[in-house]
Image (cartoon, rainbow over all chains, first blue to last red; front, side):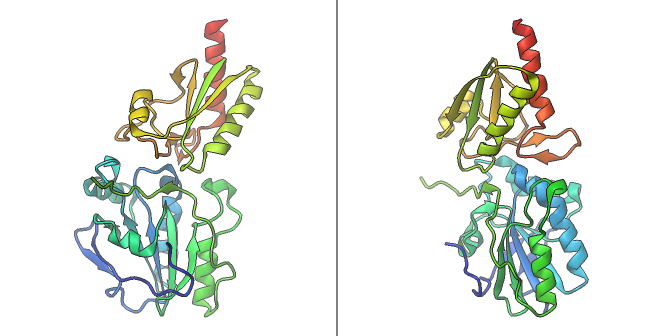
Length: 178
Length: 108
């Protein structure tokens, strides 16, 4: 089950494509943290990745940190292997840490179901927005920019007017038992 | 024209993908003999060379080249290269229209 609005961000510590480790505790005092579950192979993730990168770039100087996490099982979806993640991050010029949740424990703790799926936390690490990046996979058809609107609200010290939307994307590819 | 529409309901584009096909048929002026089939098992995806939902087989042929590095798995969304270079969950309608028209011409 996904986190509920107001829940505290579950901690994580994961390797990134830059050869570092990203952890929730290590994100020094930002005003907000966006945790985005995404991946390489999914067409929805690919459709939104440039916009995710733009959010990280546009809000990075305003105390917002964005972390992307790929939890997909690379044995069934090799395009989501760690090596492929490294290539993707370089090719697309990601300005955010792209982390690998190989055990899938973080995705389970957050209750992530889709890629991409955004969990936005305020400065106290309370969930204030959960859902899609915006209202269309087609960048030319976007009418409502959910994450940007939520970030603007948080940075103004307010609660987002829209706290939840339905994430649209591929399912997280869980490891199969047995 | 025989069109097989392969999909998996875990991928959110399946309804829009079917509407797109019907619109393409009207635009191409091609009567579509439609079979809608849900792929639910990986073994079936492998056998059908199902590279993700939705997949369009027009007169038995996939309308797009099979992507690299993507397994034949039931619960996958298909990535289509759009005419402007972007990747999307559905093809451009113009590509569907062209595939239908070409198949129609071959069988005429």
